[in-house]
Image (tube, rainbow, N blue to C red; front, side, top):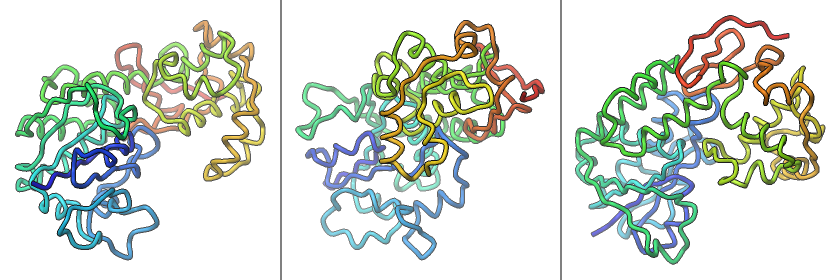
Length: 332
């Protein structure tokens, strides 16, 4: 019986285990950062390989191993799924993984022959921690995918794509039990909306609090995951958030290497070295933000995406811990 695993980049190590004949990872889309890809771009990514695809823009680039008897990698993802008797979905609790899960389930909703092969593996730990030797003593529940899982996923994906966070808030009042890890992920995502008092999301505030406690280097901010306690963003995204805190008109952080202002985002080595050179501390304004006496968004421009919602100073949805509609605030 040929077995296929679909997973996130967190689950890359699964291809070194004997759990499946093939493993496909989905690193291309980070749904927690930046504008969401259009439906056409997603369809192209999952479709057959063509001249429309740029480097790394086809799902097969990150297909590890290949089921025996399968043809070339130019096929659509659904065609690979049809070559396997079982297609397992391995996505861990972090919000981007859960968003990738609901995205894929929504996609497969339109392919009932593939749905019949789907198995949802309930992973309640970080997949990145799985060694090449396998799961060890970890237990992963095996759940069949039914209409309940598909409907819940489609509702969640459409809600997250909406132009306001209101639909995601409404989801919390519905039965999300078919996807047990979805509700905590949604709550973590909503906490990243700007606070009603500080104008910053939960991860930004936690970084300021860590700096206030004496963590002057970027390594703890980026890699001490248990201490940071926020797991929505990856290292590069954390860096962009930190730059926003340090390089605005009224910075909350000082000591971030100035070279980061001009380095291209694609220059990963240069940016990594600049982060390592940095020695961080809070400005007086930053201390006031940590004390909830200042609102960062009233002194600095806000321009980022939360799902399908474009957050700007003039359209700033807030969370406290309930959703607050935007009020027009000027950027000084």
